[in-house]
Length: 243
Image (tube, rainbow, N blue to C red; front, side):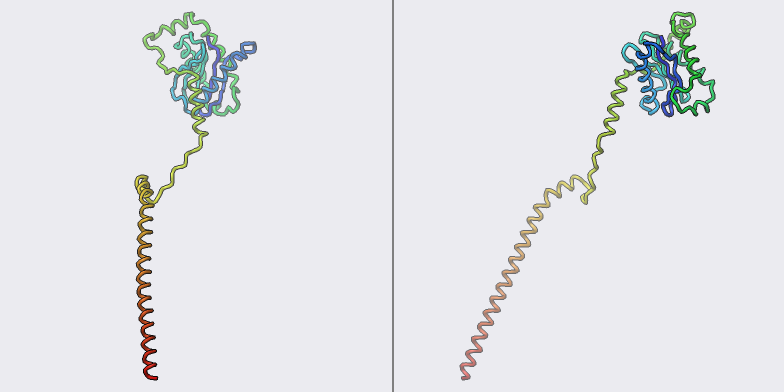
């Protein structure tokens, strides 16, 4: 039996119309499933569900949806309800929906404000309550070898995938390492390994050179000092001889 029906706009995920509006205790029971149907509509709108037709299993029920001309048609029924009949139901709704002006559909801004179509959905859904009617049996038996070929998923797998994608978007982006003058991680590793050794070698050579220079300066200075002292003694001797 058909439980929940939603017609929505694919471009922005806005629900336009729904089936029968339950006003009894069953409303609270089915309101949760209507929210889940709205979630599926949003996932189709954002491109997370790309199949034009799909069956989504949840508990003892299943959602069947169909996308036609930018409009999404979703129905919830028991898992025992014939899937082929559920898609016939969606096709009948789609045929009635396409009779309306597309510009009018595009002007709707509030959820479920296309109330005029709610009555049409309710009338069609009553035709699919009993699967044993002659009309429904004819639909089931027609092209029996060509059953509805659609993908199937579990509702909570879709929810988990949505949660995972949101978690990944919230994670901080790892900054990319800045480019170095070595232009290669391998060259940079080699440079880091040999740079201390090269610094040590260059420092040792500089100290050795400084030592040699200082030694030469000391020798030259000592020689000049000795020469100067000798000159002074020689001058003093000449002066004494003249006296």
